[in-house]
Image (cartoon, rainbow, N blue to C red):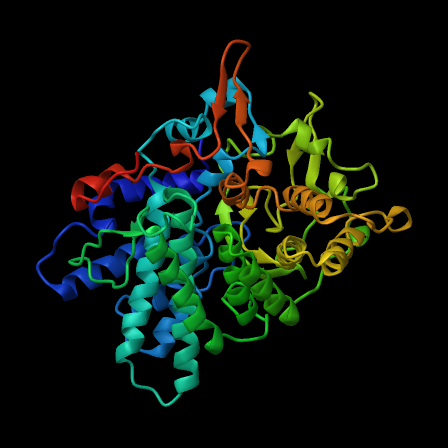
Length: 480
């Protein structure tokens, strides 16, 4: 079954889903705004075990109708509103893990269908939670448009953070509900409804994939100049996170030159790597909350299907780790049946929380891949070896050398898989790499002795169906 957190929030959303999907009409715009903000405040989670509580009840009441930069600042510090609503559907659908038929039968219908790659328009929080964060960001942007303050720099920074979150969650939606970005068809492929305003009387239709990505990138580019360069508050967007998100998005688009440049810009601000030799890998949770590699802390509550006691890491993937690779001990627990469960989330503090934010290891791998694709073997090897020497036993590590362009690219992509598993990145990688014949992969799931499921490269099932209520209330076109 899904985690209690997602079940609780999903039930609340089910009760207000027409309103939450911005399709129900109310008499006045003021009533709409107040109702919406109250609902958002009501469902904001303050009980996540690894999340600080930033707003007390008095503050919550005060910002029900935000009217100042102080009110906006409090909204942006609400961890449950922006940092803990990432949809985990792509991880359930990817090939990092498998579950027994017994555990699958104990999951929710939504998760069973996601795991089996079956069409399903009951996607609940996978669709609703990102749009709730987007709505909150739009409330902030529209509030700041009318706030008068002498501290213009602070106002610009708050505005930039809201732009970042709006882009972050539009991209999370695009990853699930759009085809991969393909230059030849991006102008006609269906994107997502772009929420540019908090006014629910404005019901957006679906943009194209190109319009979707252009809008996301424009928001981030507009935000970066006013974001802090420091990382003192890793739960709030910063300049390195802006560059890192652009690197992640351009990688997904297959825009490798730009992805490499943005990863480089990110690493020029923050390039620290954790030396796994210094970790106590025997610990139940070996990583600290917001460890030195974390650039922006974002989390998705892990479902029971992904829980390390039920979800088994793909056996063939585990076999790709060398015995001297410290990730074997830092990432995995040993189950009684000989399989591995995953414990290596950068969330720290709780095994029930999945880290999906931005970190320096991802940036090293993006820059390495982009340099390898560009034929700059030396730079790609430097980044790859820099990362790996922080992952292997010191006395056993030998730098990689003598690889040609194609060999190096294959190694980097394998290391990307081994390093970034369970971060909701694999789905995006599968979609983009399926565009290249040499990397196409058919996913398979064995449910029992007679039942084998397959997901073919570039199939329609790589695009999730949109929430049923949204289709009914808005009239937007459903995915195949």
